[in-house]
Image (cartoon, rainbow, N blue to C red; front, side, top):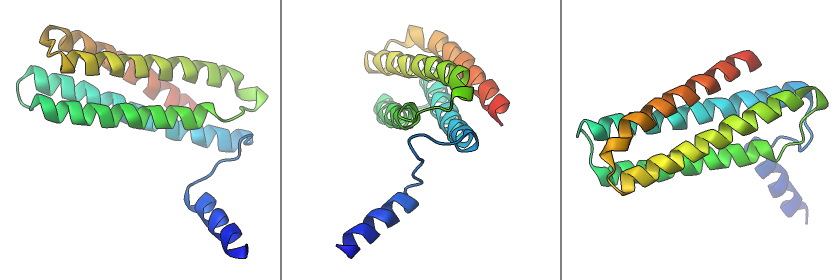
Length: 144
């Protein structure tokens, strides 16, 4: 029994576990990490679209990376959304939920365009991703 408890405690500590109802500082830290991860995934997909459009990448490679970026963003978003925000951070939570949802939608659109080889959509999607990345970066800066 003690081994099970010790293993569970070790897993929680090593996993960077955040309490379900964190204090303001812990919540802000988690928000920054989530926003940083989102920016990275959005910028990666933006670059994929630009590189594909210029015929400098294989489509299958882009699809594999797309799926990784989508999964990564989804995981980061889910982990953040599961937290109970401190009352002082309700506005931040609402703004982040909107931006992260928009980012997930854009990544889904980008994956669909890549899978369908809809090259005509790549530039507009890359521009939309740039816009959402800038919004995420700006919010990340305000949380810092």
